[in-house]
Length: 396
Image (cartoon, rainbow, N blue to C red):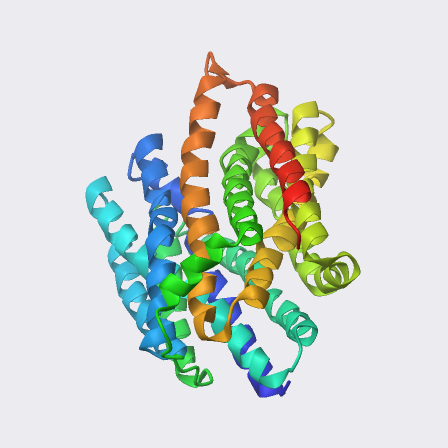
C-alpha cells in the first residue's frame, strides 16, 4: 500500500473517532452541572446517538451503494454535523439541546459505517486476498483509540491552560472544529463510487435469512448492549470501591491503551490462528471475565487491571465483527452491510442496553447506594448464556 493512501485512510479514521471522543466522555458534566439537567434528561441526550444509529447507517449505506460517492457523503455529513455542534454549544435547555444533538447524531451515525466501507473498498483495490486486507485495516483501525485518548488529553490541557471547563461547552466546540477538519480532509480521500446494482438494503437484509449470519447478528446485538453496564456503571463503581475520583479517568483509559495494542499486535494474529468464530468468542469472554472480576469487588488493583479486558473485548468482538461482515458481504452492498452491523450494535444494542442497564441499576439501589455485586451478576449471566449459544450454533 502506498504511504499516501495509508495517511489518508489513517487521518480519516483518526478524525472520525476524535470527534466522538471530544464530547462523549465529558458532556455529561456540562448537562448535570451548569445546565442543571436531571439524570434522565442526560440519559436521553446520550441516547440520541444510539437512536440515530438504528436508522442512519442503513440509509447512508444505501445512498453510498446506489447514488453518492462515499467520500462526498462523508463530506456532507461532517459539514452539516459541524454546524449542528456549533449550535449545540449555545443551547442551554433540554428540549432545544436534545433536538440539535439528535440531528447531529443522525449525521454522525451516517458517517460511521462509511468510514469502514471506504477503507475496506480501497484496501480491496490494493490487495487481492482478505488476509492482506485485514492486516492493513488493523494498521488503520489503531488510530481510533489513539484519537479518543489524545483528544481527551488535549481537552484536559486546554482546560488547565484557559480555564474553560467550568461551563463545559468547549467539548462541543472542539468536536465542531474537528468535524470541519474532517470535512475538508474528505476532499482528499480517494474516489469511492456507488456500485448502482440492485437494492442494497434488501440484499443486506436477505443475509439475515442465513442462519449462521442471523446468530452472529443477534449475539452481536446482545453483547453490544451489555457493554452499557460498563459505561454506565464503572466510574461510580470504582469510586464506591475507594478509588479516588481524580484517578478514575486515567484508570479507565487503560482500556484505550490495550485497545490500541490489541489492534496493532494481536488482532490479526489471533484471527489467523483461531479464526473468526473463536476470536469473537474470546472478545465476548473478555467482557464476561471483566464482570466476574467486578462481582468479586476487591481488590482495587484488580478492578483497575480489569479495564484492559474492555479494550481487548472491543477489538476482538466489535472490530473483528465489522471485519467479519466485510468478508461475507458482496462488494456491491459493502456500505449497506457495514450500515447493518452498526445499526445492530451501536444502534439497537446500545440503545436498549442503556435502558436495560438503567433499570437494573435502579432495581439494585437501596438507600442511595448501588449493590454492585447483584448489578454485575446480570450482564455476566447474560454474557455467559450468549457465549454458549454462539459457540454451539455459529459456524464461523
